[in-house]
Length: 283
Image (cartoon, rainbow, N blue to C red; front, side, top):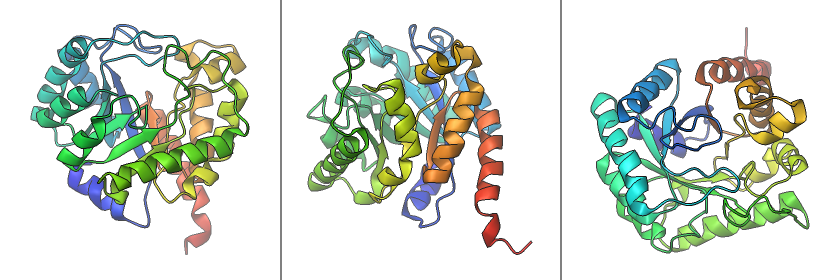
């Protein structure tokens, strides 16, 4: 999928599910930290994900796993910009930059990124809104409680679904008020970002309530610890939990799935989507 096709998708009333492939250009991400620090390896992996069916490649240069430390702007730029430039030379597939820093987002979009994935929902950097407007690009606004270093220190809510819904709607309204086009907004309830295990299950089960806000919903459940802790498995053995989480999210109205395992997820969502829509088919 190129940016023109994504723009058409965002404006469409009949959105088919999209796969966002995870590309962590970091030494310390929870699942694949260190595997793709080399830009050649990173680009090769991105091209493999595209061949496997990824619609969007989400490139991040700073780990946001629980209790992680932030990295400098210089370090984050050194990790992602060369990868974006090299990847853009090979494909017109949509590239997402996963960052909370406006300077990184600006340089990434200038290098060829098409979408900004901001886990802070434009809260960590006051200038991020200006970058989004400058490039007139789609933006993912995610819910997070605190920051990556502190978010898992006893997260609590009055009502997890209501609290997140209110927060996401507020962030969308803020973006629109400050010049972001409404159709460029994607919302993410933030699985694992300041959430208990039960919070995460509840979020997936209630995706329909977020979808009712009127924006495409993105879910990033892939290989996360709520699956691992429930099944007592490490990050490399969480594919079944990832797939069932995404299938249920699809049934509840989720539109974009941020995942590590492209082929398996694509197959599962294709069959699930056929089943969910079978009552509208003539044959």
